[in-house]
Amino acid sequence: MTETTLSHADARAVYDRIGSWQDTQAFYEDRATNDLIAHAELGTAQSLFEFGSGTGRIAEQLLREHLSATAGYRGLDISTTMVNLAQKRLAPWRERAVVEQSNGSPRIPAPDGAFDRFLSTYVLDLLSVEDIRTVVDEAYRVLMADGLLCLVSASPGQTTLERLVMGIAARAHALSPRLVGGCRAIELQRFVTPDRWRVVHRNVISKWGIVSEVLVAKRGRGST
Image (tube, rainbow, N blue to C red; front, side, top):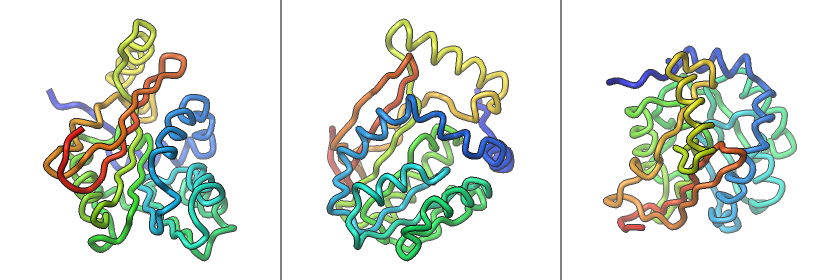
């Protein structure tokens, strides 16, 4: 059975409406994103691309605390509201940080090998399986040799509490993806195949029964 996800137009409308309220999700997101940052080797990064920049909260953290003064950042988001919020938030770094609006396509408007880090947090779990595969393929294309793919998504639960919480979210998504902002649990690792990627870090993190998968993979063949 084909899984229902938000259309690109619906995703734009939902996140235009959510706006800065998205930052309230930090109570469960931060533990996972901090784990990702700790394993993304950002101190050596010079060009970072973020697919789904949101309010710019993570980009601000990276630019302020983790990226070198010479590193460039480029973000892309489907929501006009999110792009405006991120541009204002990143104004102190405007000379090396750019946020642009996407038309919703999973294709990345950048040349081959343009970046050494590709970041996306809590975005792939909004997309159709076809779009997820396209984004991961595009990440492979736009990353330099040995570049790092850095992902976080909602993930299926394992414990009783996690299965309860994530199960409720799954039922809400089945009724209408809008009820949960389009998000549902996915397994990132199934999209990061060993013919192209070598997984260097994977973790599953839970906060109050909300489960996140953290995955960092290096461009190039390998296995976990």
